[in-house]
Structure formats: C-alpha cells, structure tokens
Length: 177
Ligand code: AMP
Image (cartoon, rainbow, N blue to C red; front, top):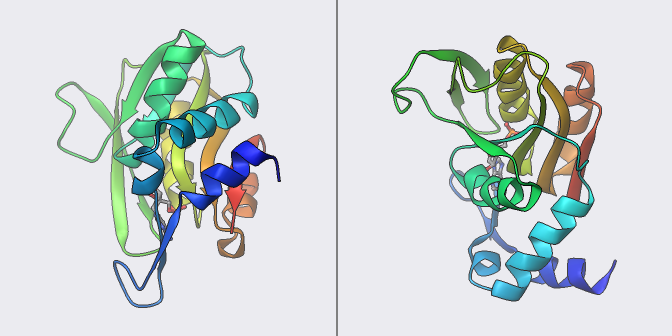
C-alpha cells in the first residue's frame, strides 16, 4: 500500500457495535482532523476518478465532506443528494434499504441536465443501497453516472456486486476492509 494511503488508513478509527450491535463503524473524524491525511484522501479519490465529468454529486451527510473538495478540484458544480424534506425545490425521491434500517434520498429535479456525466461520491460503500438510490436519482434526471468514488469499501457486504447488478460498474475505493 502506498505511504499516503497507509497514512489515510491509520486515521480511520473502528468503533465496534455503533450505532447497533454487530456494526463495525468506520469513524472518519480522525482523518478529518488531520490536514495531511484529509489532503491525501482527497488526492487518492481524485486520482482514481475520471477527470472528464460535468458535475459531482455528493450524498448527505458524510458524502458532502468528500464531494465538495472534489467538485472544487475538478472545476465543476456540486449537486447535493439529501435526506427528504431538506431541498426547497421540486425533487425526485428514492427509497432504499441500509446496512442498518431504511431511508430515502432526494435530489432537485433541475439539478442536472440530460446527458451530463456525473461523478457520484460518498464516504463508504457497504451494501450499496445508498449509492444505487443516488444513482437512480441522477438517472431519473436523464444524466449519466460516469463513475462512483468512495473512500472506504466494506468488501464482505457485497456492495460492488449490487452496484454492478444495477449497471454501475465504474467504482473506485481507496481503503478496503
Ligand atoms: P450502504 O447503503 O449499505 O452501502 O451504506 C452506506 C452508507 O451508510 C454510507 O453513507 C455510510 O456513511 C453509512 N455506513 C454504512 N455502514 C457503515 C459503517 N460500517 N461505518 C460507517 N458508515 C457506514
């Protein structure tokens, strides 16, 4: 593993049984508290992603932390994919199952133009439900998910296969557990 990725990994804290028994929660707050580590993480995510995109879409809440710097670095706009009831305009909504519980995501209907190539960003890929729901929102706007970038992938939860089954085959992660 390259030294910069090693440094990023050393700044992810595992919290057993949070928020429920059996969940190994990957806490990114030590990484966010390290300017060097956060910068390494952003550079690694950027290197693993295509540069020719029209917009970045980030998923509330932790996805915002990683998607906003990527949008700035790629000189494109940022589309927030939010929990329901937060966006003021007309939205598409998509419900899905989580590793723990279920949820709904929403996106402004006019956030993307048909044919735009979108880089979809979140902090972590577990079962894939969140990213697949976000991708459906992007596709409902007529845009294309060109690539999905996450910092962390929990391999055993099969998210990558679930994403492939949903037609999302261009996926990168920096750290796998
Ligand atoms: P999933 O939809 O199952 O792929 O879950 C991904 C979303 O849930 C991400 O937005 C993560 O922030 C959160 N998440 C799921 N499992 C974990 C975990 N073990 N540690 C931290 N966050 C998690």
